[in-house]
Length: 229
Image (cartoon, one colour):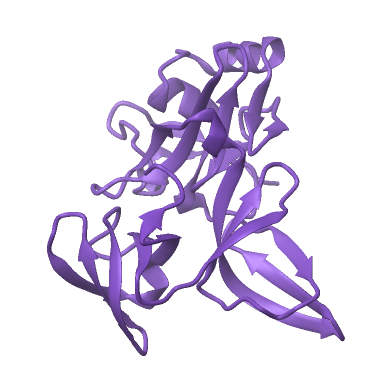
């Protein structure tokens, strides 16, 4: 049986929590996103938004208000918001996207309504199921079936919420705008200059040229980011 809590010291380093003051923290549900790239709604309302002081208060908020994660209503504080996912508080018309900052911590970025209906997802792998049928597996655990094998692992798909329809493709190539999800440059954004084997050289938003592993690159646009980060 999976426990509802984990020790704060064992929680992902990406979680911006006070580890010395709290022994246990809420465990997120078993969503498709890795734990280091997601946070339970209960912790988000207590720690990031600071709208509640206790989980009991969070439960009341979820019962009394329409809270959406990626366009879908949530009622359980254990349900998680994943990286690049959108949290919507309908009563106050607030929209937030979960990103990772340059300190390597998850944080909420206030998002305009026009952007809240989409989510960028990196393709982590794909599988040919038969003639004219390809399954694309995304960073957040979602799977999409397509007819044409037009997408590559490492590319990003901008999908609609909550329908998960493909709106746009961002190729991982020269000129792509990327956000780093790991390595010493985590949280930095920049434009790809060169891709060689598993290495990428890019010009960061700090105006400096850096190198990173290809697996840390999360494309978010071509020449210009599709979303505010």
